[in-house]
Image (tube, rainbow, N blue to C red; front, side, top):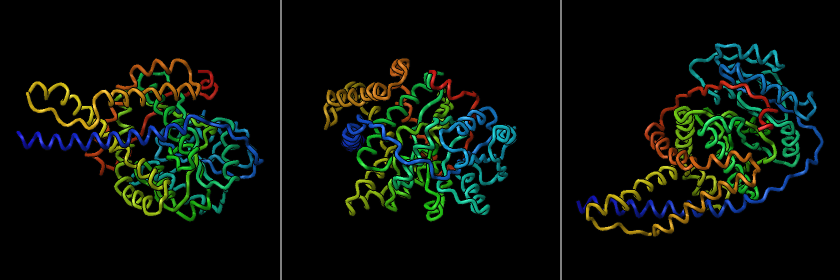
Length: 415
């Protein structure tokens, strides 16, 4: 028993230190997200865009997305809408053609998933001789704000080569799961992405609403076919010294899962891909950040550490329960408390209070504040998701997220 206690005490010490350091780092960063200044669009339309939409059996939702793209406040002759009907067995291709998209039908049962579909589409563009100034990726369930392309054009004209749009939610109030996810996104958009933009640091790429300079794509190649293709490409950009920037006013809305099981599967895929990407890039980026005094590389390494942080926080919650409830019952000595329990309470309260602050700053609908009641439970479920993802991180199987609701942009704005 003494050996078991010593091991527990050592692990508890390490977990306390790591949890405290990461919490303080993110809390300090979040201060820079308080301010957002809307940037004036100073460049006239000039960039030619190829809009890419990978889609697998999305006949229910693809029409409203294409309509929202066709309604952009940007010259129609300066962008083409390319729909990739990827191994579809429904009427996705027919619906997309009806709404005005250029449809490319792909059949490859071995190389399935968004990353492979994009890689294939980029090859088709190359073979066709089409040379847009930039490509923009959207998911089939998205809706896009009318100013999106104008903002992306302006960012590119300012010299940025990789730009990530704002990730909104089109169905936040369907269930407690969708509102919990929406709260997480509103928080991340403001306190993580906007904060890093204000500091001149790389934003995290979200896979949709992502604009990439076409010449850069030709130079780097896509080569991102894992479960989190967006993360892979963004990390490679930072490693090359290219800073992906955030466009807070270029908004894209997507559909979130309605049940905890569907959310578990989606987040499991994200975390599996995140672990694989972290395995390859986290340590080299951290070393490069320290050696080169590059805050951009170091901060990206911190982002790659996030799944481990979720595991640590999950482990910390279990260990604190053991320390404060079970161990006293056994009569064993109390483990060393590097950070006193009352300090943990204050840290947790301050970090949680940043969520309603983010909602206030983002001016979201008042109903979102009721979602804060169950948000801690949802946030805690990241622990089991990440733990399972860690032990299945070598699973690269792609699962399709089913989208069932056809929502239009005016309905989102009317919420």
